[in-house]
Length: 278
Image (cartoon, rainbow, N blue to C red):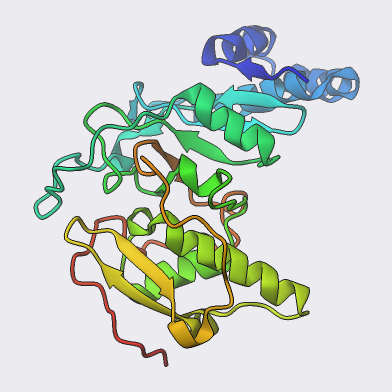
């Protein structure tokens, strides 16, 4: 099935009839109620967003950055451009202590991320492609940075991203984007093994089974402890795994447990490596 992408211009055209009736709110309301019964999903989205645009179209509207436009994936294989991001959400791309010179600009594209969301049926997930000067540690507020390689064959993560991933990063005091593929791969494999045994993989159990270290370039590596190595035959390295990254909105479509404001996005070179959980 081919995908259908709704741009802001298309949304504007879909809202014309409502704008023409702005002086008569009753006619807008009753007309929309009658028309939406025979509309397909794409048309209903246009009408819904037109209504929201009306509600926020006043002198007190938030300032936005027109160059940063999230894209969301909806059922029916529809990708829609959302409203430009509010200026207050934008983080500076240059931050003291985040001078990781080996991290290059992303190679992700709208098309490459859309392909991942389509393959995973990740409905409701909203994403942003970082600009030239943005890096993994500078996602907008309310967003997290993740890598395309997390969802490829070497790792096979899914949406919504399971709770163990966000909880592990939070308890270790690191950003999600510091986790190497091997760390995510073990979480996926051990979570699947636990599910097949009729239980779930907790962070405490995961840390009992693994050891962790942080490299000079700020990346977190997790390995099975020798005495508990029940996972074999998996790749030991994924080439260029961190070259393609994007920002994803921290909502329940993207995360089983959405990261809160206290979760890190800046990289941490002094991760808590102590094997201790309260």
